[in-house]
Image (cartoon, rainbow, N blue to C red):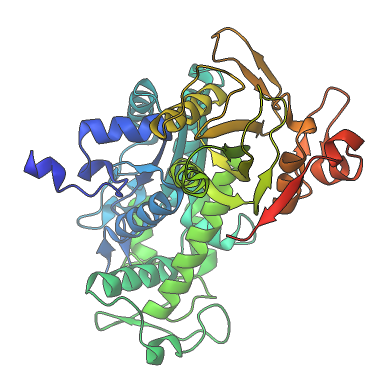
Length: 443
């Protein structure tokens, strides 16, 4: 039991969690980041496993930021053209697709509905896309997926002569090794080195071997003629590909590359999740403490959380006289279904002492789902836990409209007559709603 207790609760790394902890993660956020590696030689020294190390560190950083499980690394990819070099390995695309489908379907069986593949090997792109297509087709819309390639994320899809960028991978690897040596930050003397995203590139030296750029025309010809491993070794005996615009390989460059890659993927992941809006309320006990607890619980399941100012409001549509409410509106990105979010919200309410003796009575904690992307839901199949989105009282609560507008006046509310922004709804608020007493509270 002591061994289980020593596992950090804040980690999302499947390799470090127990079966029960993984199940709890999936219940809160049914998503997983799957890092795809490879055994290709990189740089003048022909380092094997460089891309695996980089993609795993990127996946772990994303996992911590997004509160999403990160799966164990799959170390082999489709890099069969590189098997001409000792230690490099790769599988045929058909084998890779079938293997990846088995792994992805296993995660779906366990309750995962969002899958994010992260890779640094260009040869993985097409097979990975095919595997994701098959999984989405098999599960008929119940699963959403996305594929991120480190080179493409940083450099874009077009205008490149090379399929991979050794300078990028080796720079990120040098930064990762720098961190793993126990150095929290990079000394200013290193950071003040030549800029890595501009300026004139210099030829790096790796393990005492002078790096030479590969002739782009030779590389294009090799690709066009079938990617023969032995011919690749002839034009590139060290296993190196460096595009002409590469810069020096340093931890400083690696940190900039790493941060830009993680930030870019972090933003893209939000588009595979749903933007949700919820209202928090409490009018019993220590109201501020209950609001704070609800916000903390929701931060555990939402990505990129934003909150409105705290507001004190008069009770509206309640049974008998009641004390005033403390309210707040919160938005974020959720990776599960609307029904799953409802269950989680009701669980949080119960943990904070909410009782349901009277549906309009006072309560310690109240969490309402206001919006779930642009979905319109009217599900009364699970009474008394009905689910109606947008919330039926959204337009009748001044604090909800003004709270949403304080976060983002451009948020669209999907109404039967067409979507309208909360900014527009506030400007055209019903007179009775506008007359409700709402007071801002300084936190």
